Length: 145
Image (cartoon, rainbow, N blue to C red; front, top):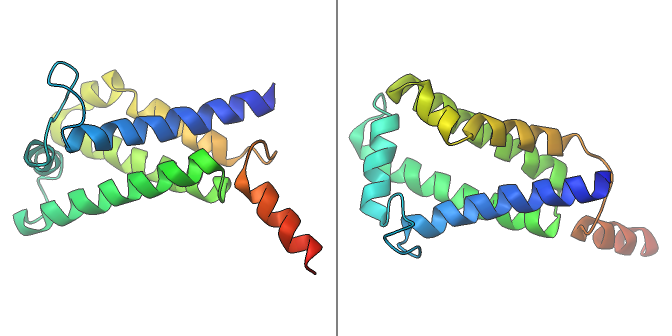
């Protein structure tokens, strides 16, 4: 059962990241979209990071988006799962805290940002390997030594 839970956590976190990224680039239809385009996403990034200089907001948005894409793919394939789960938990925690300090805690709670962060941190503690590329990489590495 732990294997299934770990696989579910990896998929849920990864697909959530990818869904949010797809929304930023208008890949969800308007009836499903939160941002719908990059400009609206950058405006939201500015809203939840009012302490950052305006000139840095686009860069922060791009860095967060790049991190979400990287973390999602690494978690999906099971590459360094513990590391990318911790990084995902940290990214989600920072996002949740930014939401909380700028617009109040309700949004972070309603969108389950802290729950997702906790799930990512829990995933980072699961040491069993299940459908992970690391298993193949470790087997290849061990057989070559």
